[in-house]
Length: 85
Figure 1 (cartoon, rainbow, N blue to C red):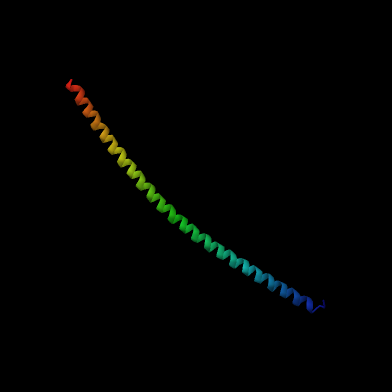
Figure 2: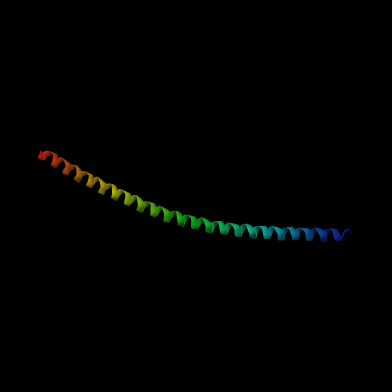
């Protein structure tokens, strides 16, 4: 390589490296955007699941109260039957 060719080769190598760096940066940005979208979707799904869990917990509480009331009624009925004798 002559003295004039060497700087040109260095410039080309630097330009190629910069292009590769730019491509890597674009790929990293695309990956970051995809991951951000996935994170948003996961957060939405978490909120949906939390709402479902809250509803199930409310249903369980309501059923526990109903069972307790039925149990109390049954006990009162049993007491009244024994008190007759």
